[in-house]
Image (cartoon, rainbow, N blue to C red):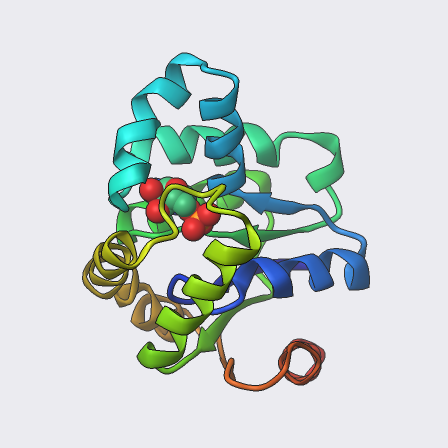
Length: 189
Ligand code: AMP
């Protein structure tokens, strides 16, 4: 299975990606996790990304496309993957299409989690408390910016994948189990 999981910040992408990892025995490719690890390790990429992420803005396309290109070459991605947090711009989606075409592979589906905006703020607040403030971008002001960035740059991808015939919209407002059951049903159609 080659899956993209999309949705605004706080929609539950990470949680649902983890369930897909277990269900299909595929790795989760999270550009956010890779960037956070780079910040932690103080690599040049991490230093470049740190301030951008703290503001809730997007890291340059070239940087994240480089991460994904490298990660797709890893042996564990050979049987499939779930992309979590990538692509976030049309340019990234086009780059991914090219990477996959070069490898002769195609997507099985783009799962878009639909969640009401008010619920997102609540979820992010809960996550901030649960993580003990471990994520510097989990606070309400930064979340507002992340939501704006999502609406402006990432939401247009829904149309992009709809036109490709790959879009699977799933109601993300239910419990974790309800949402994961809806995703499984849609993917196995
Ligand atoms: P996430 O963990 O997916 O919510 O990502 C956290 C932050 O990492 C985002 O707010 C961006 O600053 C950065 N980031 C992650 N993935 C991407 C991407 N595909 N393009 C640009 N920036 C990204």
